Image (cartoon, rainbow, N blue to C red; front, side, top):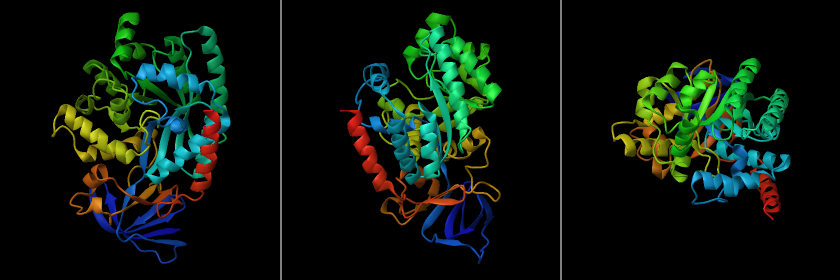
Length: 414
């Protein structure tokens, strides 16, 4: 049993001061003091908030942080990222993913949705760090029937391997410009058969949308709907270049859209996700950092800030509230994955972050949520599944991991 004592607790949008008792992996009580706790955390001067979700990343791409700078997306992929990824191995993916898990935990993320290769290597990193994750088996078929058949066999095998780990699973066809419509149709079929999620890049650039229309004579979302690809199990990263009718169709099919503002700005995709239209239609919108190669940071606190600022810059100061960014990173995501996380409530999962309020950038604190979104929060303690994984801002063993990772990255780029 863990007792968090004397915290300022964020309950929805309301703040109360008191205690949180954790029994097993759940929040047992809020406000009531328990004397027989095994661990007592003195949380005076700390705010207790729900753990954050990073709903689109490529964890192992920490190894490419700063590797391909100041380039547009297609050139970035074709000239730098894809050639380097051809040399990936299980060991480097494991170490790079583990480093990413620690980075995310130390910045308040308790759950991430990943898309990458060697997913079992990432699953090992997840188990060892204590974070939650939904891991995807990623594939491209480059419009080749032969590559598609090989990819489908590999994906089926990798999804089976992931059953041995404490993770959720997804299939991840990369995008419409790297995967055939047949590949996408079969992905949806497999996702239904295996009862897993689908993780996908959608309408990230204008070029992607224009070329798809030329090739198929219709908008991407309409074409995806015709092959049964759209459903509540689908998570669409970026979702930038969409028409109103497409957004409405996503809403009708209960598709989850993931806003990745930092990556979109860094790779200069040309405009911001049309969140006002998404909100109006009722699309469930989440937040993602994308990989460290196109963001350089895996902090969802940073992402909330850039999300709010980009939306205000694009659609007006009153178009977006800080609390909307916070909900994207918490309860919207919990709802999408069908788990009781993203809020501090009795009976919900004990995924809790304690943020230090005694920081210059947090003073004064007229509005806790605004400070969390805009003021560079300092994480003190992170609890995932009822276990303390970060204490005093420190993850046990991080120095050794960083040393091992650095040596492996040096070898990889020799």
